[in-house]
Figure: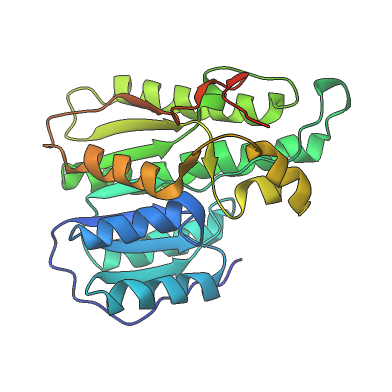
Length: 265
């Protein structure tokens, strides 16, 4: 079981309180910053305690309110413990599912089954697990489930079958949950980013090979950054509770599709 811990105790006022998964880096971390700046009380979930501690300190030094729970959403006991702690501290208005990742770019014929399994456990099963556990309290607060999927779940590409399939599954999960919750006081939002340049995503995908990671963005003018997606998330969850942004696709101007890029030498 993954260790669970939090920072300083906070007296949450029952207002806008958001749980952000994958909050130790990339889109998750930037979303936490943006929401905290906008007045949300943020609860950060990820596996790396040092990253979470540093981010909460940063948020609070800027006048925001934040706490964290060390949580591995691929682990049932870890997620159960985290959710119990979160619910004990007060209502939740939004769940922002940012945790996810890609592993490798091998063709289907030679892909590693463990790589596929790991992507499904994190991107699909992990998202499902935390969503199921927080859905009842989100309904009580007329809240929002937001899933950060990917344009990889819209248009597959060579070498990306495992990742694309997992992101397609996430998008289908969001769409079906939206249909199943009609009449219930909860919104279901899917945000599908295209090319986003972050410090870790591509590096992790290629097993730490920084050169391969850099090649992904080489020559592409102005790829998106995590802050662009975070601002889109902030906008979507700040709309009135009765307004549901079913699906939001966000790409840099230079990207028409995965295979249609303005890539300059």
